[in-house]
Image 1: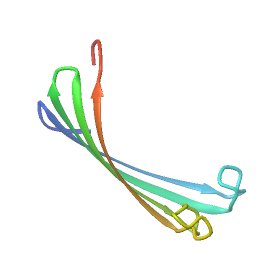
Image 2: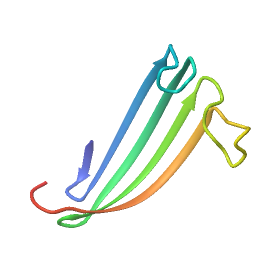
Image 3: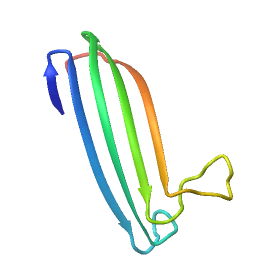
Length: 88
């Protein structure tokens, strides 16, 4: 996480996974994901987070509105409000 100023931070993450035996996904495939997160401290103990995530599979895996037509890529956007107690 990189803090741009006392109230705003950016973070990113990249992971890869090879499910060679299909133990976790049911298929021999490679999965990867990239996540970018922006965190803004509104007041002490209350944060707002924006997150964008891109998932990729080496073969059609992610469900769509049509269950018989999985796709290889999935994008997710999230806006979250976090209220926490105690020391950070």
